[in-house]
Picture (spheres, rainbow, N blue to C red):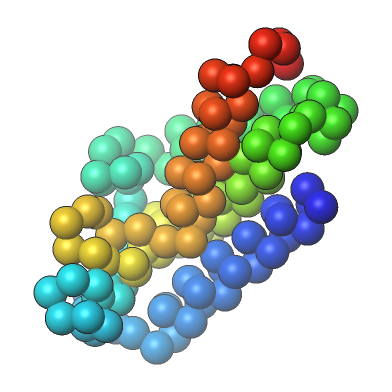
Length: 145
């Protein structure tokens, strides 16, 4: 199940980005719900809120480090509770998805625009939900990794 989540998340992320890149002009914004939710195609060269712009090698190194840490703790993660397994799978999927963009495009394709938050993508959702699941596990578990 772990690897299925990683693969499904990665395919969904890359497919949605591919769709946006091939059906929108860079900077184009299409309202889904006027003034609430738009699809807006941008290339983000930084992290959340545009922080650390043009530091793609730093983000790629973090993604690789995440994979190395998972490889070290793979047995413990895969035998752990659902919150840890799901969270780690979503985090890895999101990090790899955005890593592919950073390597190929030198930035990340973002397009979900809810107007009160920075524009984001499927990988960003996976990262946020994944980190939330892992933090939940760490706060509620009395076991160490």
